[in-house]
Structures are given as structure tokens and as C-alpha cells.
Amino acid sequence: MDALIRHIKFELSFDVSKLQNDLQKILDNSWVQHYNKNGYDGSWTSIALLSANGKSDAIYAFDQSTSELLPTEILSQCPYFAHIIDSLLFKKTTVRLLKLSAGAAIKPHQDHCLGYEDGCFRMHIPIVTNPLVEFILDNERLHMNAGECWYIDANFTHSVANKGTQDRIHLVIDGIRNDWTDALFFAHATAEEFIKPEPVISKAQKLQVIEELKKLNTPAANAIIAQWQSEL
Image (cartoon, rainbow, N blue to C red; front, side, top):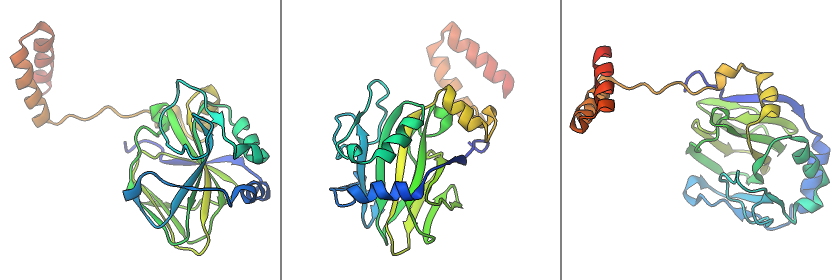
């Protein structure tokens, strides 16, 4: 995946005071501990702004591309969050606030099929942060400031440590690729930089597969055997 774009800081930016004003309205609501209990130390919590059932505690992130998400009771109190969501012209699969409390850390991990090359993607809009937040993506530290809008290819290993004394809260939006997002992404990188390279099969792996194909002894299997043997 070496040629793939790991991250983009978009030209989009949002009003920090309006972001934080909406946040203040719901800051005392019930935040749900992230479901991956073994993936972090300290407190990592979330509130859903859109969810499958319209409930703010439905914080699970998975592909819901067959159904439309519903605004939660929290979003009705946050007109600027709603404006941002509406202004991003793609189908959303998850929209959450994610809070990493001071002193907490998310362990290094990879997410599944969350790179633009997969046809879906994740955006981060920091609302509250501090200089001692260490967001590491594929061994590179990213400095994401409040009001900015970032794409993160979460297929790559990433981790976060909040070493400051202030909670770090992001608006995190997962969505489905379309023509509008292509225009947004391709303003920063070429289309070729969002294509997965073909997997490389080693000689040993090919020989192992050839032996299995020989057992099938079908015309299709024999054709593959002949092709691969000519390449060895």
C-alpha cells in the first residue's frame, strides 16, 4: 500500500467558536465508552449524531450503506454540526463525536476498509484539542488543529495519546465515495494515488498454489498452472 495517500488536510475549514458552542450544549450528556475495550487506556467515549436507530448511544461504526441514518436527539440541539453534516455531499455511514480524555491513549491499530481506495473514508474535524495530543499515522505524527478538516486512511496503523490536560474531541464522519468526494480528494492528489496495488505473490506461494491446482485437474486450473509456470 506504499503508493497510497495516508492523509489529506482539506481546504475546508469550520468556525471553531460555533463548533465549540454546539459542543458546550451537549457536553454534559451521557457519553458512551468506546466498544473496543481492549484498544485503549483511560477514557475514550462517543456520542452519535446520526445513527441507524436515531439514538445517540448507537456509536458502532460499520457499513450501513443500505439504509439511511437518522439524526439523534443530540443533533437537534446542535445546528452548526447539522449544517456541517448537510454541507458534506456524500452518504454518511457513521457520524460521531469522539472524546479522548486527558491522559488517555488509543493503542496502535488498523481499521477495516476505511481508505478512500476502498470506496469509503473517514474525516476528522477537531473541535477541542491541545498541542500535546500525539496522533501517529503510519509512523508520522499529524498536527490537526481545531476547525480543520482531515482525511485519515485508517487502514494504516494509527494511535493517539492525549498527553495534555484538556480532553480532545473530534467530529468524526465516515462516508461513501462519490463524484463530489472525488472532486474534493483529487484536488489534493491524483486518482492513481487512491488505487490499491495488486497483491504480490511470492514464488513459494505460487508453487504452493500450483500444487493445489494440479489436484483439481480442470482446464481452468491447468491454464493458470501453465501461465504461472511460465512466469517462474
